[in-house]
Structure formats: structure tokens, C-alpha cells
Image 1: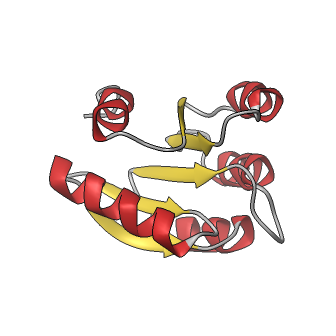
Image 2 (image 1 turned 90 degrees about the vertical axis):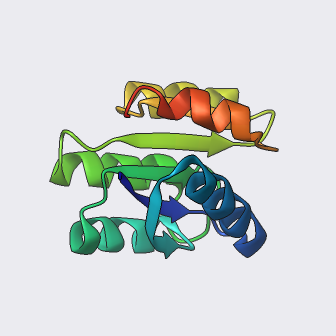
Length: 118
């Protein structure tokens, strides 16, 4: 079973993602509500995968991705973005994100993105 850290500033999005990931057979070992928290939890929990919202307070998802990749160059991070954030998605991919999923999520799209890691 792969372990996942779910990062999103919206609690309902974290809940939705946790449900989908659990149903796929992954273990959600932590949650973060902003980028700074995601970096700290990544170092503490060492998850196999991180789902990272792009737009968050304190530290956005791209900055958090960069900090996590500085700490662990092999980190697997999938970005989660709303429509209209293409420029930030491109920036995230350049910074090392493995994939991205667009909100609102479907279980099928999340599963397709995760096939690369399973």
C-alpha cells in the first residue's frame, strides 16, 4: 500500500480526495492545509506520494513543491488545480511535479494519474 499526504486549504477537498484515495487502496497518512504545513509533514511522514493544491495561503503549491523537491529529489507530487491555472501548472511541472489533476476531481482521473506510481 502506498502512503499519501493530501494538501489543500479547503477541508472538503481534502475529505473528497481522502475518500477517493482510500477507495483506490492507498493509505492517507496525513493532511496539510497550506504549503508550509505540507513541507513540514512531508519531512515528518515521508509519504510515497503528495497531492498538492496550487493556490493556498502562506506558501502556494508550487513553492511547497520546490521546497519538498529540494529536501527529496525523488518526491512524487501530483498537483491539483482549478481551471484557469495553466501557467502555474506548467511552472509546477517544470519544478518537478509528476502530474496534475483538474478540479473538480473524478475518481477515474485520479486513478489514471496514480497509475504512474503503483
